[in-house]
Length: 609
Ligand code: C2E
Ligand code: MG
Ligand code: MG
Image (cartoon, rainbow, N blue to C red; front, top):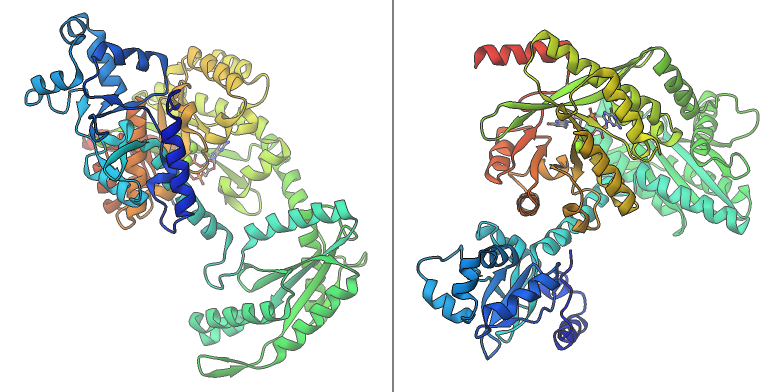
């Protein structure tokens, strides 16, 4: 949401640019980076001359007011000012007066509610963290109208809380990115980053006609070592192994920990398979040298399987299973060595395609069930809604959480029929609960991006509502930011259609994926759910707290309600309450439950109340 610089604002923008160039990229970013130059109003300006600027510039959230020496004296909030002036009486009485005259007249009587509020003024070099803290300390009142920035005490621009939130969240995201992509123990990349790199390397190899080698490495008898010498020893050994792998690999290779005692090395652009074999040989020999761990000498060995792209497979995800299968053969034939995948490697099975086939069957075999997790309001701890969450009763693996199959369902397109089933089942359950005499609760259903993008999505929903006879007012669709960032006008039309059907809309996992907040006030969304990662440990992490506070302020400025997800402890709940979220959901009060557990649980609560 950017304030468009006024036509006459060029001097200010060049100042801002200059200050960035001078400062370079400071370790702790300053507000200079977020500066919006806005031509300020002079305190002697007549109110009626200023009003048209707000009318003409829709993105102008606030207008700084300065004296004749360009010293800031106030900041006008678009909403308050427009509201104030929209009343004919105000316009008549105040229209011809200057801002300073009005301010004088009302200084004592109307402070706070008056258009020229006391601004937060910061120097251009102030850090973003410090500004965030000031905004929080001022009860977030400056979240929307912003903070005035000065250089040598003279006005140079404004910074909006929205941009600040964006910046802070971006930083949080890079922190999350690190946590998600690197192994906490060994500090080398994890499976996630590995699959990114592997995909990238394979695409590049395909373009240049070269090959990529994948080494799958498993530590022999690690479990026994870990069990007999303890986890501390096991951890230290894994770190030392990672160190040796790094020592043997080339700079251009990627060494990763896949999990447990499994590692992998990605070798980009090998000349021949011999290169991979040479590295594998070196690794096997190096590992045989004794390790000194926690004052104890120990010898280990490793088994390595190698698969080459595109020779062994041109499907990246299958390549890893093939390297795994080759490794398994090394284990079978006595460990402590390496082997290339070959056509005779028989143990290979594509776990993924097996899962996909099973997923297809699951619908027909009615293996899916819905679980329900209550949502509470923070004001009175009443149950206000319930979220439907899918589970898969797998015939052999038992009950599976969506994390282990929704991704694949999405990639394979199966999410569309699965999503239809979820919606139908949720509606059916809602009717059943109503018949049982349960109070009518809002029922939230997750909608996946692919499901939403089906051309006949609205039609399917309409038909389903007719068939099940559920009052759409009790239905809420949880959408992700990914859905909303696509083709804005189409999405807007679809959301409006859903809204017209009577369905409520909320934005799930807010804060994890957005790049533009501007869309928020255009779409008919009523609620946003702050992602668990910001709520987790909110009582211990000031950055999470400032993000949650900023999101709440942003939501309030847009008239949206806020749901905090993943509240697990009393301390988190206390903070979420203090941050003025409206509702919450989390293990602290209730985990997801089956439909019958839920109705019994709810009945129990109602009796107690
Ligand atoms: P979500 O929509 O953000 O759902 C909330 C997830 O957080 C649920 O995980 C819930 O069990 C979990 N959760 C709630 N409170 C806490 C807490 O206090 N601590 C922790 N650690 N977790 C908590 P679940 O059921 O595993 O679902 C994961 C995700 O899978 C959902 O995230 C949603 O994105 C997706 N999903 C679930 N059901 C469906 C579905 O029917 N359709 C689609 N498209 N996606 C679904
Ligand atoms: Mg959800
Ligand atoms: Mg969520």
